[in-house]
Amino acid sequence: MIPAAFLTTGYEAGAERRAAQAFEVRAIAAVSSVLALQLAAFGLAWDIVWHTYVGRDRFLTVPHVLLYFGIGLAGIVMLAAVLYETVHFHAGAPTPGTTQFLGVFHASRGLYVTGFGLLATALAAPLDNYWHELYGIDVTIWAPFHVMGLSGSAITVVGLLYVLAALANVARPRARTVLGYNLYEWLAFLVLAGGCALTYVLSEPGMRQVPRVGSGLLGFLPTPVICAFGMTLCVVTAIAFIGRAEAGAVVIGVYLVRQAVFNVLAPALTRQSVAAHAIGYRISGFEPHVDGLVVVITLTLIPAALFFAVARERAASLWAGAIGGALFGLGTYLWVAAAQGQQVPLPGVAAPLDAVALRTAFLPTLALAAAAGALAAYLGGGFGRLLKAE
Image (cartoon, rainbow, N blue to C red; front, side, top):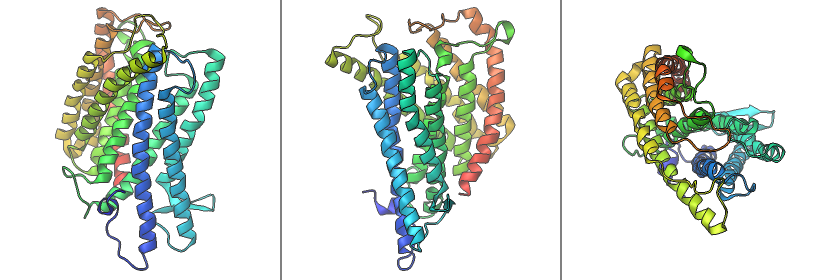
């Protein structure tokens, strides 16, 4: 059981106790769902490694089980929380911040949004399985029902941030803190770090299948542009919501730790599972391994995070977003360039870009990353302010 001091503050015993209990249930549901979705996130990271090196031998692989168990558990918790708050509302003890839905349900709007995101992600699973049965193994994440599942994940991130923001705002005056942040703020950092990871997953085909868009002096690398938008959005949202300049750097720090753990565990567990079940790899001798270069090159994201910390209250401005987006784009550009020399030798994977192509794509890529960062700062600033007022 999570200590009550972390879960709720500011409620007096007596007439409001039943409402306070419903608020505590919302808090427990939020914490449980975030933890369950970390299990699902690792399942996704492992599944990507499994598909790349082993293929898709069956639906119920261990990575799939982890992925959908985490999603299913979070979905059940969210549904239970909605029903609990609805019952309390009709019993005359509404939880603060409830919203009516379909004339029957009364719960936090964040719970609704999170539930719909999880439902979309869960429904993508059988549809994706049917797609694979029809067309075989995908070589890209940009398959229709992969995108549906990832879109559901993005909706889930938004919903969880609304739930956590409401809890953090209530808890902030009295709750215990670690390094100056309360439990819900740390969970929001973890969710935003998941948003950064989701951005990278969505951009992953830009590493292999579509490393460059356009040609000549107008050609650019799509991965840095996508990452510049998503990472700037997450960083600026954190700064605007928490109201502290270093909040964005904390998000990137949590993201780097999370990715390092996933990048070490997923290849190791894949090798162990293949050996234990005597399964062959898609290409003989081509086994998963920890790519130390890629792990280290992700540290190039740190300068952008530090820049937003220096920008402070101006982090949500267009100029700060443009500079930060360009820095994120630069870091990810180096990431893509390093990955080009270690391409996966699978069907459908494009030939590595040569030095000339990388060099001519540099300036257009940074220009587009700056534009993407400016847009993301504008949107992130607005979203963060909404969360602050939740």
